[in-house]
Length: 404
Image (cartoon, rainbow, N blue to C red; front, top):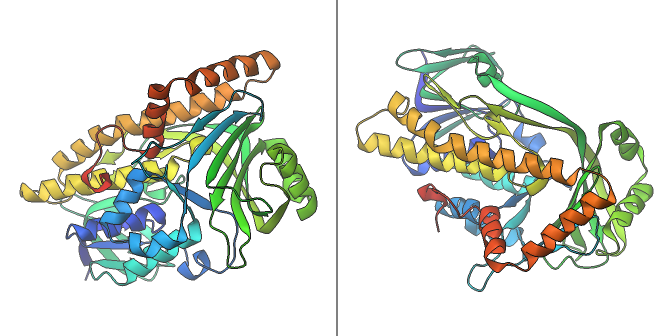
């Protein structure tokens, strides 16, 4: 006999588990099915993987009851510095009085621990970890998956939240526009002699962005940051093969001394960078969220926040549908979710792609033009505030859960 709940969420990562918790706050029950072992995802160790949580996304965490646990563990972003190869003409984004920080940085492990602990304590969430799906079904009245152990799980709505290679999306036959940047993001955790003062750096080099993201000092008082270093695909293997000292020396060259002496902490990792955007984010009895629907360049750290906007919008659509007497998989609600999220996610994807290409043009003349434009933005408070509001996620038609 099938175990039926209202939502059948495939993918229990950061976006999928946030969706399950947000839906539970509105009274929706869910199955969360994930292939990964949570013990491996939350194992001790600092690997440098971190996420910037925008102001709007922080509001979402507050509204689902995670702030008290997360607040002491995050590092507020006091300002964002944007530079073209550390040459003159950078932009400094700083919040206005009363705005608070520009966001918060968290190690991904910290976010997972908080989400997983909350999920275990939530009776409306049935979490199926280390589970393999062998069959997916979507019918007129429900959706279902069959697991490798023979268990059959049902829901009124199937949600694909597995990430960029979503099997749920592929099974539904949803078309995807995609291309590769032929770059890799090299991720490393750093400790450094100088404090970062809460400044997030986005330094653009011809090969790609070089981002330094502030994290909280560790228990020994060492200053820490996460590094996201974009390198050409053909150079990535060599960069990863560098010893810790050589890697730190190469990173220091690109920092121009802003963090002092640097030490690499923990393992390094990398992943290929690409763009993808689905032709649609819904199908009968199906909704896509996060990277299953759209994958963007990490140039502005907006990928996770974009997924959380999907979460807020989908939960709001489901809650409004319930008030009208509609069940979660109703086509009317899915149409509203498609309309609400389709354009916003597409515009953010285009903006990040455009920035990547603009700053990737080599040569002194293009650099001079870029720096002239950046200097102009620096002198225009209204334009700077628009950019900051976009980065904080507080512009546009926000779902209720993402409002303060």
